[in-house]
Length: 114
Length: 113
Image (cartoon, rainbow over all chains, first blue to last red; front, side):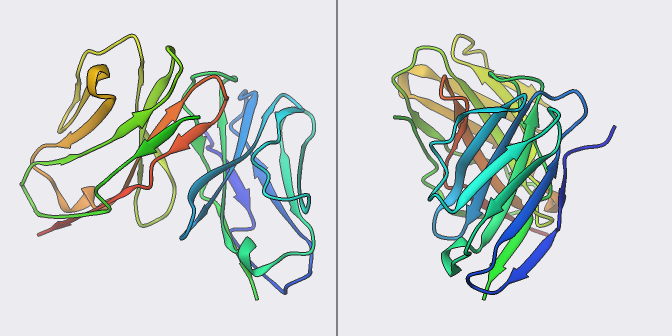
């Protein structure tokens, strides 16, 4: 079956602009996760959804970051007023449910802020 | 707080050599899960294995094997008879009640022909 998909695959934006990154999880997976991978910070957890609710937003690095999930499926990560330090690969993962299930990752969105 | 340490940042071997990637973790939870993921040059993280904290049995899958030792808080990964296609970055990760994966820094494995 289809895996996790993310769009766009690459995004170059000017500092100060807003960007939206999209994640389409595996069908039937109720849990969805966003991570960020950057050279200096490794792989960092950003936010997790169970269904449409996000019980844990502790990983979001600033209030410029927000995420939503609608219909228990597609999720959007929005970064407002982008900064150069936001440049990274943003990875989305989904799993059957919250808990110990293995998380399956998408190919990521490479964000470059110039 | 939990932490995962992969002390080896880069390993280079010649094809057919065996190689072990080390992973040490810290957690206060008694129930937790450990994972290994592979990230080939294409960039997508590929799930390899999950172990729970109550099961210390070693696992073998083809050329891959994993050694979980709670006494030393380690979950090491061995590739036997390495191949060029094994070249990738390998991540060890810990999952607990926080509902997120905590990743180690990764080990870049280069297998030369």
